[in-house]
Amino acid sequence: MTHIYQKNESIIRIIITGFLNTTDIIAAINKGHIYQFIVKPWEIVQMRMVLSQATYTWKLKKENNELQKELLTQNYLLTQANKRLHTSKQTLRNLSISLFTAREEEQRRIAMELHDELGQSLAALKMQTRIMEHDFLPAEKAQQEKIKSWSTVLRSSISQIIEDVRLLSKNLSPVIIEDLGLDAALQQLIDNFTQAHGISCSFQPAPLQDITSADGKRIVYRLVQETLNNICNHAEATHIHFPIKVDQEKIFLSLADDGKGFHVQEVLARPQSRRGIGLTAMSERVKMLGGKIDIQSIINKGTTVSFTIPVDFDRKKKE
Ligand SMILES: Nc1ncnc2c1ncn2[C@@H]1O[C@H](COP(=O)(O)OP(=O)(O)OP(=O)(O)O)[C@@H](O)[C@H]1O
Ligand SMILES: [Mg+2]
Image 1: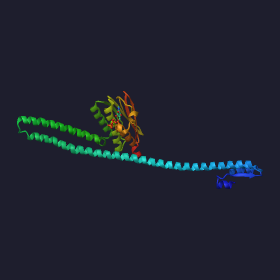
Image 2 (image 1 turned 30 degrees about the vertical axis):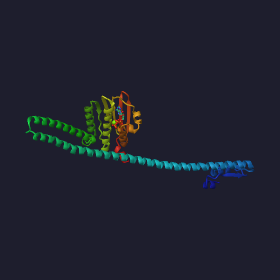
Image 3 (image 1 turned 90 degrees about the vertical axis):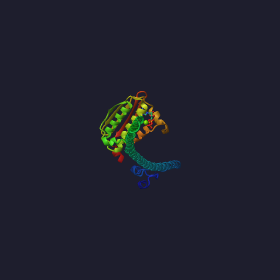
Image 4 (image 1 turned 45 degrees about the vertical axis):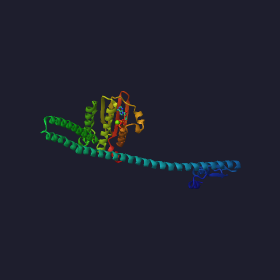
């Protein structure tokens, strides 16, 4: 019986015996895993019942085995699918980062073109108006005055366009991040913002040198920039509280305005075609850094947008 059990445990084993030696019976049960012991003389009815139960048990065991095999296969397939999903997610994240980098590169190129080409051409145009003014000096007094006043108007329009181009170029590519670092770039962003919109801001900077990658710095800058844009476009706020906290694992930035607030869930539930791209772009960018965004808003009290970003972003990016 032990031999049969070891060869194929699914076989149902029944012993029909006339001997009742307890030692043998215990050995058969323990080693041979006997299903039933029938002591002679046996009844045909009893035998039929035992056999039908044994057949039923065997069928159940067989089905159970097949189900377990199926479960193992399904588990294996699920693990494989999960692995593929993880790889796809990683690829998608890397793609988003490459796309972001490519877009930033392109914007930087356009910013430089604007600054170097258009800026220089406009400066040259401004000089030409002076030359024109000079060339017309021998003209009659009345004409001279006219030319002078037109020339002044023209020069001030050109100066305004130069200033616009400079601002546009600066916004397209915050070169200041590379020149002065993220802390100084954020400080300048806030200074320009408060000056332009008359909204005060209590900015509490913290050393951000832990963000070492150029992408990381630019993303953080863009997050703050977009949050400020939303405040000046929608919040009707008078003040912003903007602390930055850094510990060994994460950087925490939070911008709290005292504006009119909005229904966050309602806005996020709108189809993409019926809302702006600011909040979506922000959460995509935070995801690229492996971080989290949280928006809390109370009507007539204000909105707080917080970002938690892991400092080991560079390591995560390589994984
Ligand atoms: N600080 C805020 N105060 C009040 N409402 C806000 C604030 N930030 C966002 N909102 C609301 O959330 C909406 C969605 O913002 P989101 O930045 O996604 O789009 P948008 O600013 O309308 O357009 P876009 O950013 O594309 O120029 C806004 O239209 C506004 O109603
Ligand atoms: Mg916006």
